Image 1 (cartoon, helix red, strand yellow):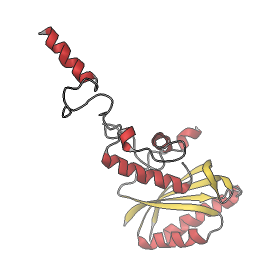
Image 2 (cartoon, helix red, strand yellow; image 1 turned 90 degrees about the horizontal axis):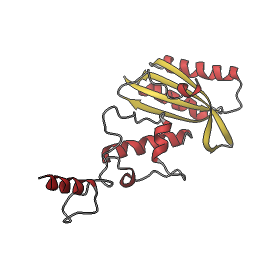
Image 3 (cartoon, chains in turn red, yellow; image 1 turned 45 degrees about the vertical axis):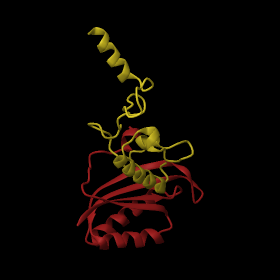
Image 4 (tube, each protein chain N blue to C red; image 1 turned 30 degrees about the vertical axis):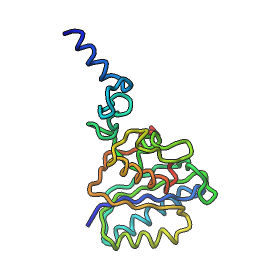
Length: 108
Length: 90
């Protein structure tokens, strides 16, 4: 088991309900496929540096979880098909720091 | 004695009045790496404000010759910048 971080870039024109559904959907996917979610962060609406698929802004959802290869495969599969997701990124870490939040500080 | 001390200090302060080629030039060009001091900022793709200092206006990564980042940290820096670019943060 190793620690991972997964960031999802969702479309700008989603409603709040759809965002919640999206968040819970991936939460379940991780938990059901031999993984364990440690923390979920919502970064909110952020300006993109350049246009991606004709969107100037996007919602960011950030997962910190513990899992294995099977969890990663499940996420990649679902994220590729999903139409409400523009981009996604998973990064492996030896240690997760759950204290630092780079995006919430700017909001407050 | 005082005179000697003064001369010694002057030589150290600027890189222009070197005596030979093999003398190390300190001053502007041999600045220490800003990312490997104590309590250095965390290199992470989420730390966008830090990464913005190390890319040009066109989005290119600035070479370590100019920013004087150490070789080890420069490799990590490029990796994090590329990750941030995938997500559209930079």
